[in-house]
Length: 131
Image 1 (tube, rainbow, N blue to C red):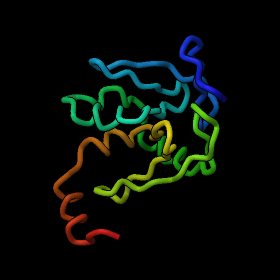
Image 2: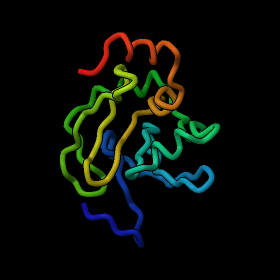
Image 3: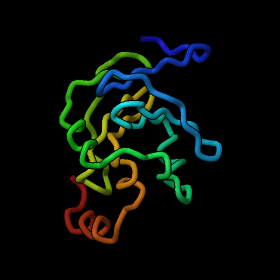
């Protein structure tokens, strides 16, 4: 599916429902109207992570998000190519899907966890080191 900015009609890569644009400050992302997963175009997640209360757009239930996390083999909502399952380098327990050309998808609750890196997460990354 080719992205047309004049006809915004992204479909959720996990459940196939429509996604709506939601904005926090000057950052606009896409949120699924059903599973509440979040699509971030390249750079948007880091930009939102740096904002105070940037996780306000992550409204979904983390328990339901964990269920959707089991869905594998998803396609980028921008280009249709298979997305890669990626672990956050600092928080190894967070897994999200990435398209090297367009961005990343996080299930409901994952962005809140991603934004609030804890002291325990930092300690784990120091103890385990790089892989």
